[in-house]
Amino acid sequence: MKEYELEVLEQYDIEVKNIKRGRNSFLLDTDRGLCIVQNTGMSERRAESMDRLCLHLRGGGCRLVDNPIANKEGAFVSKLEDGTVYLVKKWFAGRECNVQKEYEITEAVKNLAFLHNVLAEPTDNLQGDVPVGTKPEEELQRYNQKLRKIRGFIRKRPAKNEFELLFLSCFEEMYAFAKEVTGKAEECRKLYEESKRKQTLVHGDYNYHNLIMTSEGIATVNFDNFRVDIQAGDLYYFMRKIMEKNHWDRHLGEQIIRSYTRIHPLSGAEMEYLALRLAYPEKFFKAANTYYQSNKARIPQKSVEKLMLSVQETKEKKRFLGDIFSFHL
Image (cartoon, rainbow, N blue to C red; front, side):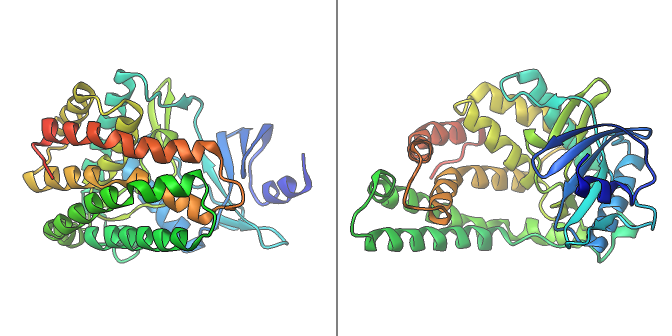
């Protein structure tokens, strides 16, 4: 066992039987079951809020969540001498949700719907201690501003690489699409204000990486980004990732919506919000932003392929939005 691992574990009243190292974390087999130790930037106050959230979820029937574990001092965040901060959480034996299996996708959506039912219930022990999400139009406006900034940067480059030439060649079409969606996003302001008034909570990062398929059901993990926000945003985030990997398949999209609404019905305004978020060319933005933040001396071919795919899928996505939501731009 490495020295820093010992320094962390000495702060906890747990007996470690086995240890498996991962990226910025290590998995422990202990006398209290599986635990994970994660390098984190989380404050003690935020960790306490996350523990109260997990208690609320378990009380509502969501048993398989990764609640933080307190150390010997009763704190959830443990600091090492070098200032590094760690969090120990309950963990689960299993594997990630398989995005190629329709059954697992629909089960994951049902899990989200049930989670949202519980997260929509009043939680007195969290009042005033949870951040609030960004207004939908403001988030998209920031994306648009960044796209313009990236275009300006590339235009000034004397020698342009393959990625930059591709970005410039499709910018006008993709930006026009982004701008039109952003203009419609203001219509979702009432949903946002309602989520603030009702203090409805979201997971904030609901994707297949944070779903562990176990023998007892689906474990939902990594609530680090939980906040007050429009719950359909969680569904959007999960659905976008799935649809991108399944070529915007109409049947799968219908199954996702049907599975979710049987447990947690969506209003007309929420369906409109979901369609708008899916319509925004976020994959194009993400590919461009990743490039902008990277070392531009060497652009991986994979980055070029991602940008190209984000443009090529637009036709498929427009057809999907029209078929599923009767949404047209």
